[in-house]
Length: 212
Image (tube, rainbow, N blue to C red; front, side, top):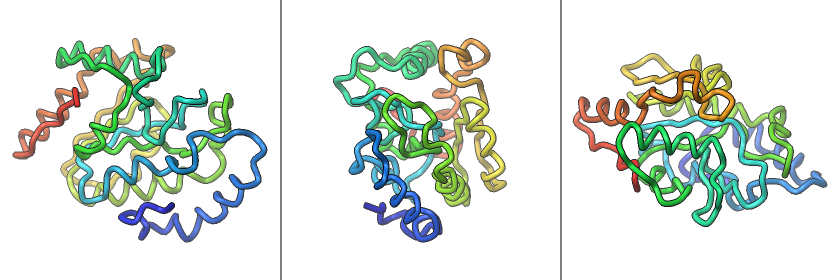
């Protein structure tokens, strides 16, 4: 179902019907389940967004993806390696250790965990990269950047969309992706979580409880 608070975006009348039709003809298993496809937008409405973490596509492992970038259901073990590296940096940055991989607590505090593609065939990372989903991410970035916001752009894929962020008094943190292939090239040691909270504090806003 189209998220009501985002339904004004042109994507939902211009692009979504075609993507929905394409997904309906797929013979492969599609992740996440249809009911969770827009979970990131369902949990964080435009007026609540304070921070955006931009991912690429959902985890292609069945049982992992549930509609929020980098997040997994609470019972998933072991954690996906990118998420494990995010948690390593979180601990090094703020000495916070999280008990599971469910990031819905972040989303409820205004952290939009958005992938640039909202579906993936099981076992085929990037399999829906050309389906047209990126138009939604572009429109969301333009929408939320109408007011000051913090953006965490991890990796080249996310950074290619920086031009969709409107000029304003934003915090934009661009580093390597937390994947095992690149985390040591600038993600580790970047301290994104404390930097976001310092920026929010300077604006008189409550910090994000990254342990929630």
